Image (cartoon, rainbow, N blue to C red; front, side):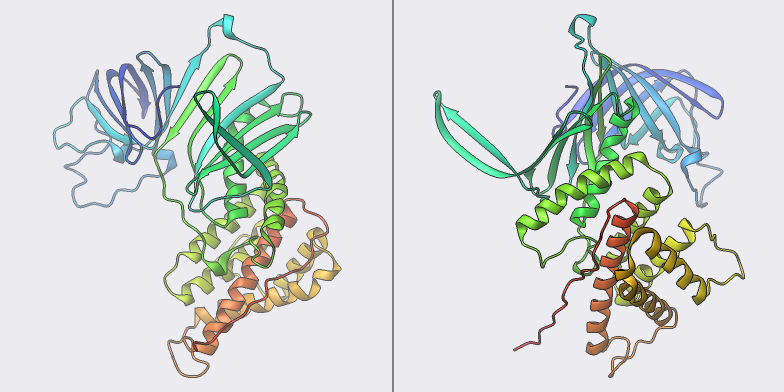
Length: 428
């Protein structure tokens, strides 16, 4: 183990190597870790490194995108090699006088260590594990029993919910929530069914599945993999997990009992993880659905929430039916109806006709009303109590409809159009 994620650490760098805009840089230095701030590197290079001219760019807005980034290789004393997959030029300290001091914060560092050949043990599986940061506890139906002893005698025992799936011909999973803000997951992928790279990508696929089933943003804190005699440890700076608001939950159904929800969580996690792991247009679309739902949930006013949520439907149809936006072009009502009917035929069934029609009506109502908003507070005004109740019910319906669209594209069959019962109460 390279380090404890929850505690600060410092490493000596016997080598720092990277290329930036065709020029090679080398040096030595130090790497520090703080679980909240992430990594920070300080190194002296063999030549000046100033990706941003602090003097010439004074008062200007600088924009960094993925194509501007570079990667860094590190030789870490006592720990083998390490890799910084993404470093942003704007992260380098600004100096009016260019120098050879590399100093920047890093979000992520991946450590590599090769076991001695004597310790290599052939395995049928690609194996790995990850720790996720969550806002609330994620529960599954399997029982996790923990026991402790004192002086060799049983002292304390507890039973909690966990995840256990054993299919050695495909994949095996175990998982648990050691606390409300963390979830631990381990996996083993059969080498005859999965590629080596799948074990590396598994943590990200599972992150997306966990986020969708629990209606919260989920982040990878660290992951570990073991393959072909090599251990890989990936550490990332903490990110804040957030729950989606009550009206924006794609799959959570508060009308179900806890046991039913936990059973569904397990089925959905397995299927959605494989879906995201295999990738493709539908997988990318489903993840963007959730991300925009999260964005809508975090808006401060109702109008912005409604508009962002409504436009998801059009984005789905434009994407999966290859209808890119064109200036001056219009996505007409007959096109939306045709796209909805195609989606219903491809992923739902005849019993979904009523729900699909309502989704089209709500898309039109929410989108147009907020493209031409009013701020009236009288009866039937945009902020009146009657309109707010209607808005909340509509947001809940559309969010659950998008959840069903995700399940449909992920390959779930025989889905039934069951939507939450929305109840309102008045102050006593």
